[in-house]
Length: 371
Image 1 (cartoon, rainbow, N blue to C red):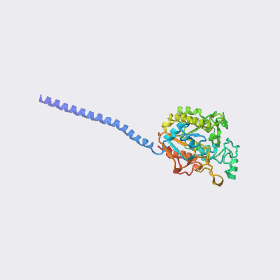
Image 2: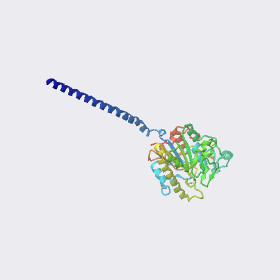
Image 3: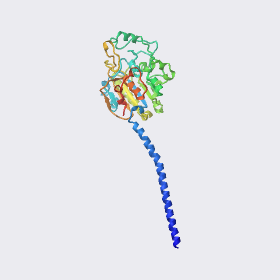
Image 4: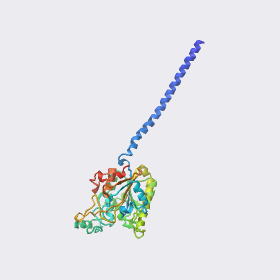
């Protein structure tokens, strides 16, 4: 009996040891399953850190909305007519010293995408055989400036941001409100679309390229593209002459134009903020081509007789980013459309064009694009 009890006890000890080993094996197996999960979380940490590092890695889409003919003082602070624009300005980034490059509209649009106002001071239509005498600063130009501008064909051979984007495999599209069809080459349409607000039509590298012309489309396609998620890296938006605050005989009064433009911006910005582009990282730039009053300028604006500055005067600039509200006001440095183009080029590291070349970090608007 004693031997039987001994063997029973020995068997119990062995069974206990086997159970313990099984438990340890199970615990080790669980640990092995947890470890890869923890490793993936650690791997994600540098990526989340990148959201606070240079914006080049985060701004995947830039929406450029060009408004018309208003001074900063007419928009910023005018909460009665422009409540939404002021809401954006008080929540995101602005600058108090932003200027049009010159007068009138067209040379500012050309400057915005090519880094040069192309030596003209008029709003004439595009065409290799189209020439126009200056319509602004006529008494302030030197004789050579006046002559050269008068004889300048309105089909330019220089590069634009489109060349830079495509060379770096970035996509683009231009949305023109009230344009009747993609690639439309007419000077105007229905008194609402104006070619002078469509700078892409003035460059031979675009006009002579059928594929590029199909990227210049009516604004009616904008909401469709946003909903479909087929959103380019660079998006240009020109409202029509009633919604851009410019005005036409068929539009409302001057003050009414500000309210109408404010409503257009609100609708457009809200559409962007509800798109996939916003989640991927985006910035919305809202600016005005020129201020109808004055000729102040900066940053390589042209100069005329006796060194007179031929600038486009002070205009608003608002930059909204998907980083979220981050109010900042730049007030110690002057900027213009060249500065903005140079900043976009810097964000995406795509080189420089004409007057954007040679600008150092203090000449750029990068703080407005940084979280």
